[in-house]
Image (cartoon, rainbow, N blue to C red; front, side, top):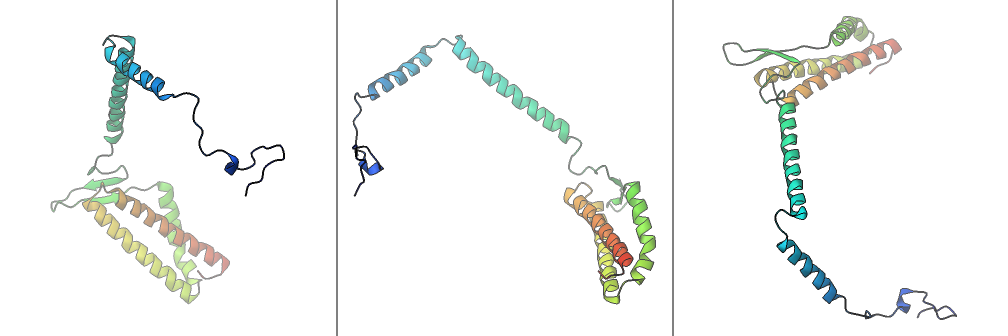
Length: 189
């Protein structure tokens, strides 16, 4: 049941007629325009302005593609697989494996040494359960660093191993910092 306005207006979509025929048939005009455009394109001379503009766009697109490839090659040539990253110094002994040593930031080294010197006294001030957790964490981190450095010696260009080693260094610093804060506060970890 539809509700109509008192003036006879449409209030819902159901009040609209289901089919309305157009006043004239539009398809013949559309077909003529499409056919005319196709015929005009086929009869255009190769040197015409329309054909020349299309060729110029294609040449510009090709030149842009070549430029992008050149820039990519230029950027990528310092990041070739198998080449040691800038943070790694490598030497190849007689057995064919790589001996790798990570060169770290001097600020990191100073802070790490300072935290390691204070570690003994700080760990001693922790409750026994916290002390065991800290020592286990540091042993795990030390073992992970050794394994990652060994793996990087075999594959110095491996970005995943490099990232894992950096994350391991950060984990070690977090543990050392947490120990310092916990011992300063007299709490456990």
